[in-house]
Amino acid sequence: MPLPYSEIVMEHFRHPHNVGRIEDADAKAVEGSPACGDMVAVYLKVDEESQRITDIKFESYGCASNIATGSIITELAKGKTLEEAKAISWKEASEALGGLPPIKTHCSVLAVDGLRAAIQNYEERHGLVKERVPTTVEVVRKRLKHVMNPLVGLDLVRTKVVKDIEVSDGTVRVELDLPSDHQFANNIRDEVIEKIEPLWDVERVVVEFIE
Image (cartoon, rainbow, N blue to C red):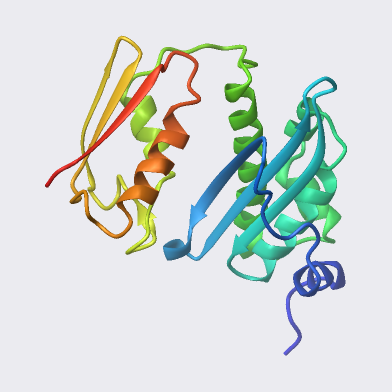
């Protein structure tokens, strides 16, 4: 039985472009979850003056479609301005791959979401967000859905690790139902801060562990 993928998909799957991470990235984002089957991380280097993406890399956990769409997204975005890259759609990515099976369409959506989230991360860190919505508990909770609990591969919210969130006068306090000596405590703390700190009205992020 032949594989339900185009030759272009298989080429990007076997020899993906721009794979890896950028250690000194100007922005990065992770979308999806290994527990759900697919995950993609996107890293950006951006020329601050021209707002053009000078380098982009991705890491992928998932199927052939996930890897291929991550590869094609980086090719489509490299060299574009942030505004141009934002306009890249999942349909454009799918068409550039010669089409994807309908059941795998979500893979192209995931890759595009990863790219847009990385661009948003850059804009937040550089004060480029045009619509400044005040940070609320729900905004924080939504962001924590993108922080993984490494033991199970699902986010902190779904695994009920987040016990309390407080937002007051520029300070966000997140209480987690984990001991401070948990093997992944430092990694989780860093990821929580990384997700919350770029918000325009947040001055301080405090992560507390329940002993």
